Image (tube, rainbow over all chains, first blue to last red):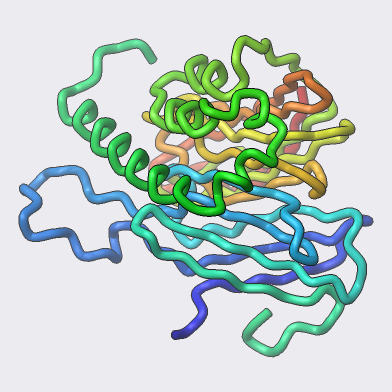
Length: 114
Length: 182
């Protein structure tokens, strides 16, 4: 299955900034159940948790609510990361969807990916 | 903020709460429990961590969010916390907000949009990462965006107001972004 998450590590102002872009649309894209009455609130579909790992060790763990925009771009910083370190991100949404992606710091990203 | 809600919004909140509870049950069944327990702020109250998060996301007022997340701590406005947010934004758009913290021993950052129906936007617990967190958030109407930062056992905050205008009128006056602290 095509990856929905893109991750990029770049060096900014003395630390490594990890940027995570998740292709995760809100209900506008999702099919509303037919049983839902007209005017009923749209079913919510959002990322619930996102975990960041550096070389297999959790360095940050975030809990997100419906207030986070669709296709969120989440950024964190790592001061102690070096070139060659592996950064992984895992996320899970409120309907059980999720993904895990990783990248290696310090290598040029492939065209169109990262 | 304290005006009575229309019935539809009450129902909406209940649906949200139940969905979250189901999610939390599923997650807590697995390894997530160990991960949760490894966070300092959860360790302080192991059995209540998930319930507190649930309360915080379901809360309708900023004070309730802060109480659920940080207990009785009072936030100290601090120049060491910097919020980067646009001055103006359009409704229903993703607003880019970043929080930078200059202090040591940062444990947790929470982003709160005061005037949203559910003010808590997101929480990040840090265990090795820098005091930096950025995200795109939804702001329903003009509202202060407040970052609460717990560091070294103390609670700090900083706030920046984002004005929401229909169609984004007034956005092009050279006031795209501003940084603010304290």
